[in-house]
Length: 209
Length: 145
Image (cartoon, rainbow over all chains, first blue to last red):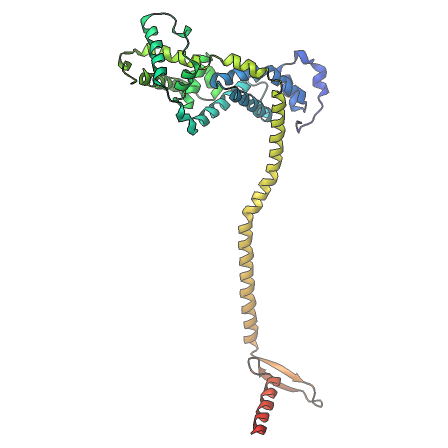
């Protein structure tokens, strides 16, 4: 792996020892042709990218795929990353990861096996029992877990955009402004999307309760 | 089967259940992320993918040039066909023009003693050899009779 631009790297190395180097300094070194700097960026951020991907996809292979593709895209887009930009390198990388997750969600919706995620009557009963507990007590609903498989099947009924917004809002705990920055959408679009997504999920739940 | 209690469920409760579902779908996220992060050959695979894509981009340059050339083939064929048609057209009309300008050509015979006999002969008419052949053939026929 070698970057095409080749400028002297020693000056940056001399100024900043590896341990204290910021992301922006590492990006500059990668741009100058130092591949080891990209490996350091990878080591520094892969867990974060993995966390983003794992919010959307339960399978390890899917998460790995998103992680790899995020860094590959980042590598080829490094020239478009401006260090002085409002977004940090981590936020910039998260944007790439979120967009890749969105693309993958859309692809999954189009696949024929997507229709196979039928919810059995047993699973619907589990959901109903869960809701009964929530209705009878004022206990913390979120402390009891709906099975992940069932949750995944229910979310699979949502559009990719709906699922993206709900996951970023409820699972990641991002604000509307943060989601707007991550997705590149306007804040009003994020709000409208979130409202629609909640209404859609309510309809899905009503169907199975 | 499903949906029997749906109308009595308040929206607020459904929203709480929905939130729980979204979180449940993402609950093992950190574990997954950690296990992916600990994969020892992940960067090697990323590096290999970068190299592969770079090579593909290099190949794309050639492919793009080939694609341009391929797209130019019909245009070039059309130009060639037009050029051939024009060449044929002007070649034929030029030849007929030249013929019509001088419908007769001068046949010079310098075999005579200082006398140049010039015979104007139509180019569409028979040549001297052909006339001779006909005469000889006619004489032979008569002698047979």
